[in-house]
Length: 556
Image (cartoon, rainbow, N blue to C red; front, side):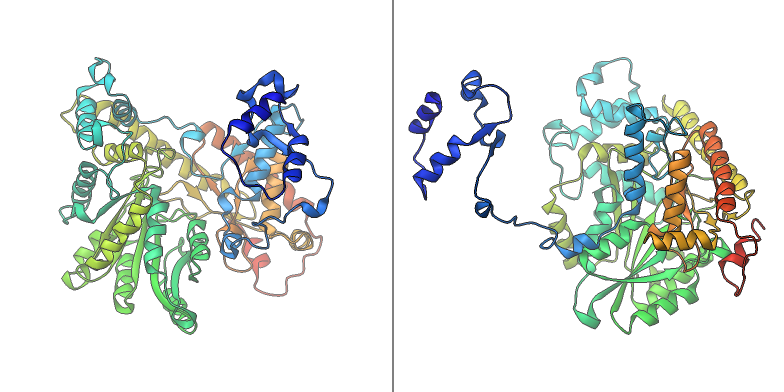
């Protein structure tokens, strides 16, 4: 105590409201470390480690931040991909590690598109270039191929101090932006891309939020309305809630392989105009969670609709493979002629996470912005500068993806082999998933055309629906919870993505290895049959053309 008093005596004087109160606090301070204070000396003295007891509860001040004072927009945000089912899966997984007995030996997380977590191997060339950028001393190592070294040196030349640890410009490293523009021009068979319209982002989410912040304004009937597909990726509904924009749902046509129907777009738009100002049209292609790829004709109709109604188009490009025909929105817009190409405002988003590389953890991404007002573009740069810059390592990874080995370079053969292996496996797993799910009575799954997700519709018997309602949960939440508890399989209920009333779904990834995916699908099949039996009705009453009549006939 003498040492503490000496420390206080030598310190700058602190104005006190009450000397007696100050002494009282000192006398009742308890350190989290055990043993007397003198044992640890001044090195252990920290107010952060002290707890204070008071015998007078009235002296305890109320917290500034409580659920009552929390920003209501934060409370409105929901993100099903990491929601209650996933939290429950984590609890079960920790229990298994501690020896808790379950009817399964592992939790299979099919809830999120995290390729490497599911066992997909990294693309060697991507990791080589990023490793060289992170530790330039490796540039002298004969282990690394020359083409990887050349790319790393070029990226480092554009980094402050030739270090990946320095901030980049808020828009991103210049050479990476130029490589992305070259990639887009090549992808779209000569349609020009200006690197000044390219912005590096922290995954696609960062770019989507930035553009929405620019677009959301107004009050009452002039408040910005954002059109999103249903089912949708929960990022959009969460962002709309956070920004207090007006959510405008348009429904994809499940009976037509989740196609985007122009009449449905018009219905949603006209209905919304009665209470808000629709300004934004969001497109996810390939679909998430639905996995479909939109046809060129559909894209043309959508872009024509956006042109006619003066909507800003936000296009989320989730293309992962080449096992179906894929059309770039920008290329289609160009082919529609100058009147469209020079006027439709279009922001497209891509990331390192959802391509064949599956590099989710790098949080790399970019957006290309077309036909934005030049003064607004300056405001965008200002907004991006607030977060300084995206992770530079993620920018390096993005560069490698858009600038892979060329045919004449030493890494080309290995790179092509690894890329083809990933894409072939995805195509096989997409087919396997569709085939097995459609063999189960009461489950119907559309083809997985170009993404890493399946979104099957499931029949849920009326008694199960009633049980879910009595528990104040969505019927497909009950289904997914029981699936997790009985099999260890973690999927996301369709209610977290939005769905037509009276239909039920779940989203699962196709990323596990073919062997594990087959086990997952077989266990899912067995569970679903048990679920139907448990909640079966001896004489089901069918009084309408509802879900029961439709799904009882599945599969077609």
